[in-house]
Length: 240
Image (tube, rainbow, N blue to C red):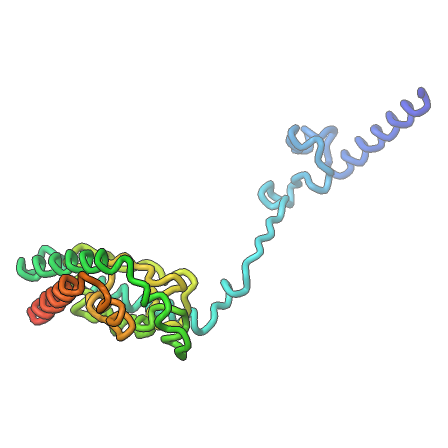
């Protein structure tokens, strides 16, 4: 036991000598090694030639698709920037005519009413089966396989802005460039009914028309669509 203890003391003495040679001082404190780093290996301690913040390295792994986005991703990003620029270019609400603001809010109300009436339709979930892209990119939403900037026309964007709707921030999750509209995803449109263009609320394809014809509320739905279309036509006819 005594021999082992003497051997440990000798080893500690040799370690102190190595420290003095390495750091140029009589002790760790004199050499500038903080007391909290006593347990660190000497190679990890700061030295005059290496600042404290440089003693550790942090490695961050970034997916290659984040560093090198595909051409289609860049196209979608460009399309979103163009749409947001179209929103930004609109005149402030305070500078617009009262009639235009009133019609914009009426359009918003009619879109919400139409969405409530269509809440239980099923045709839109499967209407694109068997279709070629972009319409057939997903099983549903065949009419959404169109250009974003086509449905978000200047008049549609103006009506949205006057009704207090902000520009969309991001495309639909799970969507892609071959699906048509930026906001078309596997589960449908990522925008709220109030944030969608009026044309999306008015349009009825053959599949949806067949389903609506079997319902008892067809007259009220037809009246909603007709009022929305007429209100938007009045709004679009106003000077910008």
